[in-house]
Length: 438
Ligand code: SF4
Ligand code: SF4
View 1 (cartoon, rainbow, N blue to C red):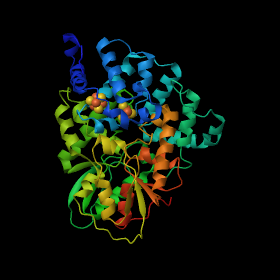
View 2 (cartoon, rainbow, N blue to C red):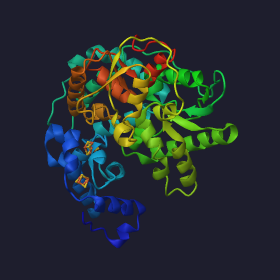
View 3 (spheres, rainbow, N blue to C red):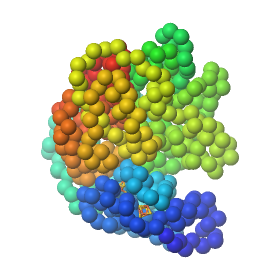
View 4 (cartoon, protein in one colour):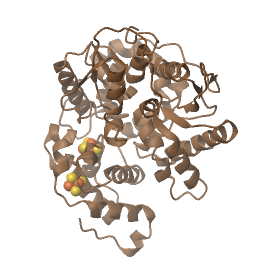
């Protein structure tokens, strides 16, 4: 694609990067077929190619984006299915991230929307506050029926619709918090490695059992696990909302504490059980490439970051439990399959450990979770969830497995089949408790 940036604009490293990405696009349109918003809405401007044009124009003109541009960029899930499909290697992720930062900086959203986004950006990355807000949301949940139902077509869903979507996602009760930061879990038997486990923010409130399962499996196989003190939210939530100052501050804070841990006690890997977070931590090196102090440490940390399944693949798990024939529908989270290109590994681990694993039809399509998307775009998100749940039902599973808490909550909202994390099944197979019963 031909671009028309001025030399002055190209002096900006972000514009240079955008120029490189835009020039790689040959506007073939292959990406449209796998884009969930295009599949649902059928509008070229809700396709990757359409959005790429809109972003190109916005960056070239260097003027505040219009409401129309914001509408179509906001509707993008950042699912990255387009990147998997694109034959030209267009890095849509880095382009749309840059567009979101521009929008956040130059576009004046309506007051209610600004308030909602500020509240989400402030509360979600703080587990203590998030826990309190979930308790309050759980109490308010019965009143959600009084609020308007999401309807498709509006340029931007209203505040009440979004609050309704938020209440629908709130759990009826919360589990006890997991182990405190700073805890070190000793390996059982011969020590084979030492890892940090990202504690996460929403996940540690909604489902501490996931990291507990990871700790069980790792220690059972000789790996020492540390929950690093002073670790923060990885920054994914605010990064996807275009609030890069916050996201990068969190990245720097995490790099600092992980580096300290690696230097003092050694780390073979930083493991992540939420693939949305993993994708961003693996991208710290890129995000901080212009930061003189952090560029190199960020590269090192990104290289250490691994999805839990990547690390387990090298451990040779020892299955020990007789489970009978349990059929598992494997939901491939977008951040795992498109963001990190991890597609077969979780399924292979599950199969090797005794589960009957079924692929879900249209598995490339997002479930509609996408960070805060199911709150900010509830109408599209609920249509995607219903489509996902219907596809899952076709394989008649006993359980649904996924590697991302956002997908788990989203899918669980539309089905009575237990939705569990892949690591919970691997824990069960190697001697842990049966998941999905709580
Ligand atoms: S598939 Fe790639 S090259 Fe083709 S239009 Fe989409 S982004 Fe551009
Ligand atoms: S990231 Fe997903 S929703 Fe956004 S343009 Fe690409 S395929 Fe479509």
